[in-house]
Structures are given as C-alpha cells and as structure tokens.
Image (cartoon, rainbow, N blue to C red; front, side):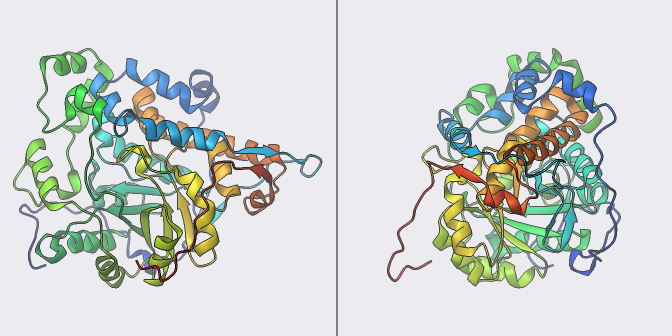
Length: 434
C-alpha cells in the first residue's frame, strides 16, 4: 500500500479466510468447563478473589497498570456501583433447569453472550496475556477482540482464535489514514470476523496509579521496578518465554527489532484523536464485514452511527480509564437500546465483573457484554490459566443468575422485573446534528 508499509518482512500466520466468506453454519466445538474448574473455583470463586490474588504474583507496576483508571478511579467505582444498584424481583415456578445461553452475533454462533474486550498492553500485566486470552476464547467459543496496542499481532491472534477473532483499532489519521487502512487490510486477510473502531479517546488523560508505579511515560524500569520483577518468579519466567511487552501489531512499521520505547513513541505519533463521522464512513467503505463503534454513550450518536451503516453499537465509557466524570455505560444502555436496538447489535463493557453483571446488561437490552479488567485480574492471579477460568466463572454465573430471576432464555431476561435507579433519560434536541 502507499504511504506506510512494514519495515521488516515477517512470517505470516496461517490465513483463515475472509470473515464475510466463512460459512456461519460450520459447527464449532461445544463449550465445556475446564476439567479442573472445581479445583480452581475453590481458590478463585469470583473475579474479586482473582483481583485479590493478583498482586502477590505480579509486579506492583503490572497490577497498577491493569487495575487503574483515570484520576482517583472514581469512574471505575461508579461503573461497579451502577451495576450493583440494578435489582431484580424473581419469578419462581417457571423453570426447572438452567436456561441455555448460546447466542448469535453478526451471523456467528457463540457459547454465551459475553466476551473479551479489547485492551491495551495486557502483556504488561502478564507477558503472553493476549494469546492466553485468545486461546481461552477459542476453546470456550466466545468473542475475543484483540486491541491494536495489544501484545500479539493480528496474524498471531487469528491463528489461535480463528472462529472467534475480532479486531479493534484507534484513529490513525496521518498520511490519509495509511496505517489505519493497512491494519484493516491485515485484519481482513487474517479472517477477523468483526472490526471495532474505538471513538472515545480524543485525548489520553492522567492515570495517577499508573504514573506512580513508573509507567507514566516511556518504559524505563527503576530499581524498585526491577526488584518487583525479580521477586515475582512466575511473572519473570513468563517474561523470559514471551519477551518484553510490546505493541506487536504495529511493531513491523517502526523498524527492525524496535525497542519498547520506540514502539511507544510511534504509537503516540500515529494513533490519536477521536474518529470523525466522515472518517467512520470511510472505514465503513473499506471494511465489508460487521463493523462496530465502541465508546457510544448518547443515543443520538448511536443513531448517527447506524445511519452510516455501523452494524454494532458498543456502549462504553472506556472502563473508567479516560475520565472520571462520564456516566456509567450500563446507565446509558436503555436509551441507546430504545434508539437503535432494532437496527443494530448492542454490545456493552465498562464495569462487567460477573455473570450477574452480564445478566443485568441483557435485561436492559444488550445483546452481549464484554469484560476487560476481570481478564487482567485472571492472568495476574493465575497466569495463562486465568482467562479460561474467568470465562467459566462468567458463564456459570450467567446461567445461575438467569435461572434465579426466572428467565427461560437470554431473550426472556428482558421480561424480568427490575429496578434501575441510575438510568439516564435523554431529552430529544430539535435539529440535533452529529
């Protein structure tokens, strides 16, 4: 392509075909809990136990990076509190067995309406985390969305998760979006089923805990950070196996064997700002498969996106990692469902910690809910085994929660009786413009 090309040739992972050409009726492996689930469950029965167990196994800076949000973490606390305030009145005598949770998203069948959200730098929390998450998602048959600033390449993730692979990008507008369109091409060639554009990062804001831990700028390990690494032997062994955390997908455009800091500088130069509606329309023209827009909180923005041909609206406040003052995504969900729920697939993240949270999102109209931090806690506490356990927890909790409120199916969750005190109600503006 013109404008930007990899500066070093690399071996390509095996291609799995274009997503739009794949047969959605091809049977996938049936979901089954890990053989050691009961044993794992005794140690880590919820995501909260995973969060509690992570700091003793990984460096302080790794935990702080994955656990922190913007400012004083008020946005994270608000997200959790918003979910917790949604209460249900159950109906009993309606079902005698656990309800099924299989779902179809964008023409493809999955084991459950939940998945792994795109994240930046999971390999800082646990070296090799990206591919561990991808393998677990493939085995469980739930969506895995690789982030453009993740620690695995598009081709690597597609090779280990061919049936469930989605890909996310930020705005890369230099040289008329040369890098952005090149990444779209690679995603298509690798067989990504869904492309996600993240719209909610116009600026990078301060994450105080991250800065205090030594990750506020370039990666320059202090004596304290080196000590932290040396005293976490399992993390150190994972580092030796997988190498230093890097932005793998964009590394080939930086130079021959670029350093971590060279990749950081390149990413900050190339990636930035929020997509304009005109730019989103161009990506819609470039990508022929399902396209989602991540970071929507206002129903009018959702309507504008759908008018441009966006297939999925991803309700998100970036997990509280950009600014503390944003409304929780779960509180904005009903208005967006009302506006475009019949025209687009509705996805949600930001604050999802459990299958019960997934049920809450389904009851309010989402088609699927995605977790981010919970998966980082899982690799922190359990290493490569963590993501599969987190998926098992989410699915078991979801089934139990649906059954507990008397929902016969995912769709029936929307008929549940619940209270949602934090729901945002938007006034329709006259002559509103995108």
